[in-house]
Image (cartoon, rainbow over all chains, first blue to last red; front, side, top):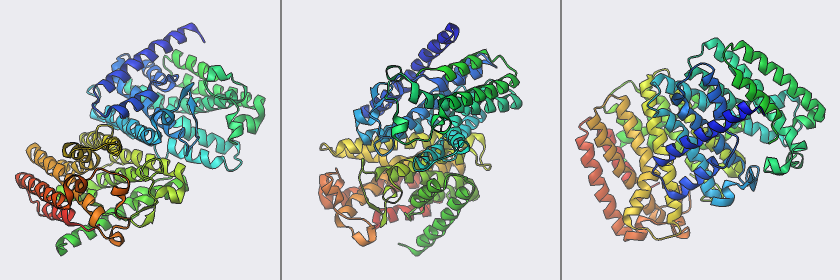
Length: 294
Length: 294
């Protein structure tokens, strides 16, 4: 990774962590619930979604305080989806990022409720951010609820489950990932650009960029599950094969998957150029997501 | 039940059902997900929360269309909490309202996701209601997310779970129910009064009213679990005893529980009078909730 990007990611991971702390300090809730919510929210993770949101905002504006509630809300929604995904009734994972999953530590009942609470609290913190206008709050909540709800991320999860029982083609695979991963990434860049007062045309190009970025993210995930290093990933490789998941390597072979990733990257960068802004960070982040080893 | 109230409830249950249909018709999502969401949302239920919201609105205003998104959002959040509550890792219930619970029909994985989707969609439909101003949307979302999230309903559920492992006193029992049941009822009357342009003082009295109404609701629930008719309830009685739940009859005996209900009812009606509006329907609903047999 280029060291400028490395610094940018590190700095903003720290910024993110401090914002999480401040949003939870003011939250007077049962101890066990708070512990469980924070356990998964602070369990590392690359913070790719909030950093994308921030990079997208900084392509157009500078007062980053306006993004704080969205950064935390977005990562809380991503985190809730992981907590529920890991449950025995879903993927039944004991470890994530090298740590025990939420239900292994707190029990299934608390994990289900902690996920519900993370999801609900995300809408609360946007709705009461004093730095946002009512119009901005409504825009963000409308977009975020659609991206994460039954016509967004949850739809992707259902389709993904159904795909385990059958053989899907490339088109279906793209649809699943566009919903399951892509919608939240699209929210990230859209929210950043919107808060930064980008034009509608710029926002549209960034949304197309994010669509491809989501696919790059997923194909690299699939590739790492075949060729990755368990120590770096913090989880076992080969689980897609074991769980009979539909993946890019399974459909296209490893070389085909890499070729497809390069195709998606070209498309992503094309839309990034058309968004016509200071998008250095977004460019570097795209390459990072495409080439990451964990 | 007085027949005027019966008509009012029947009419508005039908209104509610037709609004649910219209919000789901426009929703292009995976079939199994939609089926699972609608299964629980349409599984009967008394619709007490939306009817309270409507009665509170009608105490101050007449254009009921303004309440539709809130009615459906509120009941979707109540429904999601039931779907998750019934899961094997939580209360492990096979039946609710005489029907198989969601996970018994659709599987645990789909039930978890359907609950998540109901919760998320509720914020979406308020955020894009064309009849509401941005200010109104933000007010409703702020209140609803707080009432249902980690400092509201979810907190109540966690405390309720913890109470099963210990003996709680009356004060703790009230706190649990104020959070678990009361917060959503408070949202119902507050949202109705707010949309009907009630004054802040009126809204404050209605919130106090709703606090006691929530307790009435719960003590009657506890009483029915001891003395109720299984056929009318659509579920087994005596489950609180079996699950070692902290209840009013357990703490106070049946007579003590009934006395406490009468005390709560007096307090509720006192605040209702102070809200100083045409609150006939709210008065009748209070008596109905206090004396219901299912």
